[in-house]
Image 1 (spheres, helix red, strand yellow):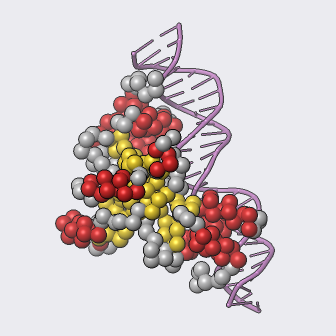
Image 2 (tube, rainbow over the protein chains, first blue to last red):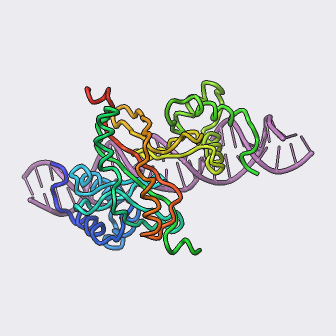
Image 3 (cartoon, rainbow over the protein chains, first blue to last red):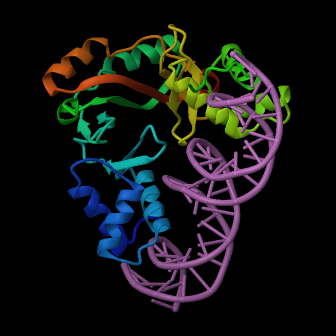
Length: 130
Length: 130
DNA sequence: TTTAGTGCAAATGTTTTGCATCCAG
DNA sequence: CTGGATGCAAAACATTTGCACTAAA
């Protein structure tokens, strides 16, 4: 069975995600992990993230650049963010406007919804001034 | 000034987007364009798409795979799609549930929204059966 | 012990860039 | 003409994969 062993590498990745104030890209996780274990491989990061994803331990989103970002799937978490186009800060967006619509769509368009992503772009408080 | 000349290549790309029933990826545009002009270069596709984007002639979205897709920005168009995870068909999703929320967010979180993307994943009518 | 997980390197696939040439205005 | 646009090839990215080796259980 895949993803069962608690390796040092997996623990590092989990703790990085746990301590992060915002979702991290695979590259960010890699760079942070390098400081803890200097010989960790990028492929290890990706393989662990994939395994965690399929076990629903983490969630995945997509930036406009095509990079994926990851965050812990700890109940509170979701995939709705306000993303600042200047500083790339990702703010939590606590409300999901899709709850009611989902069932409407399912019946009216005969489409079985499994998930969705919503990303709102603009400028955060700080960057509005610059 | 960039993107001003009406080259044969630009015209091909525009007509492909105009005649497409759904957004196209750069790769799809390239393959279709090859049949019209067999020596067209991928970089020409990308450079034209970039130029059109910065002139707001087209809009860009992102698939879960990290591939970008493009569609004409002709008023009707928006970036809300139902994307089938099996056949990759993209259905129009005519309702935007964000209209009211946007102004709320702007004031309550002090975030200046410029745009957003919403992608809903699941299974279309056909693929629900397979 | 045994096999999932790792590190490393090479391969993928999309997108970008350098550069000599070409052509729209 | 002349600079913007092209085609081609190479480079730059993020991500995936093959394989021998390592280490968790």
